[in-house]
Amino acid sequence: MLRNHILLATAVACSFVGEMTIADADIGQHPYRLQAAQIAMGSTGERPRDLTDKLDLDANQRQQIQAIRDNYRSEMGAQYGVMRQEQSTMRALLLNDNSSRTELEAQHRVLTQVRRELADLHFQQMLDIREVLTPEQRAELAQHMAEKRRGDRPQNSSQSQGRWRSWFGRR
Image (tube, rainbow, N blue to C red; front, side):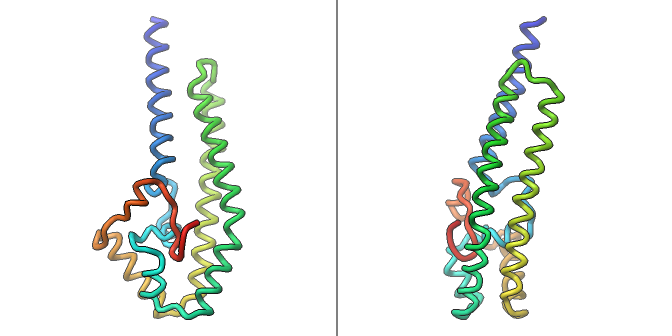
């Protein structure tokens, strides 16, 4: 009986760890990621330069967008570090036979909050970038994203490798 419980607990823990590893490898499919944040992160399937050309950004807009991205870069990088640490803590708790349900639930809440804060940062960056665009450019971007959601654009292989991209370059 005890052996069956241990085997079941191990299977569940391995399942959770595997799911978390998959999420790490393919962050583009992460359930906590907001659709609006996808715009800011640029999961467009195109090279970033192509979208800047398509939106016909002038030099001032490109400079403003780069400044916005630079402004958020360190905070987002720190938040990614916190998220990785909290994921590591969760994995350790799941693999530890002595971890209580309460500990696991508490760590889940912490991890969920960190992910939410990261999604909020992406959303704020997207809003800041959006303010730089003209109404025509916003309409073009909205059309581009609608096409992307319909699958009119090929998937970028870097997405399947879990690499985050922005509209206007790598993070």
